[in-house]
Image 1 (tube, one colour):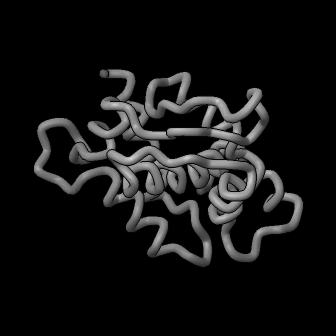
Image 2 (image 1 turned 90 degrees about the vertical axis):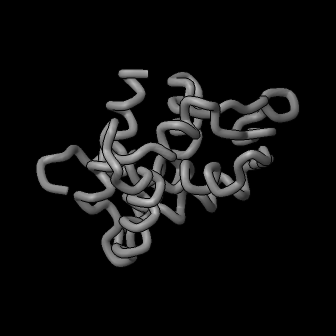
Length: 147
């Protein structure tokens, strides 16, 4: 991802992984704890990434949860005693579901954005973070601003 700050490209990877998981579980909410949120974060780490960058990407999941919740993409309940890393009944909101299921551009007959995200994650197992992934995540947030 040339020209894109590392923190943003890393963010895109974790966002994509989390949204795919929530989309595939919809309409059933899922309960997440530090063990499985860590798996979501660390599964976003591209093969061949340094240990320091792997840690940076893998531990970003809590910040991604907070951001997506604040922006209205997901809804969840805090875990016991508001402990860090617990997200009970996590589920996409109508906004999140609609945007992920929408074609790439409004009024287009293209494939849903979630399909583009899944394809870019699967097709680039060696170096996740392709231009296609960046464009799909960008499109999600652009559509959210129009929501």
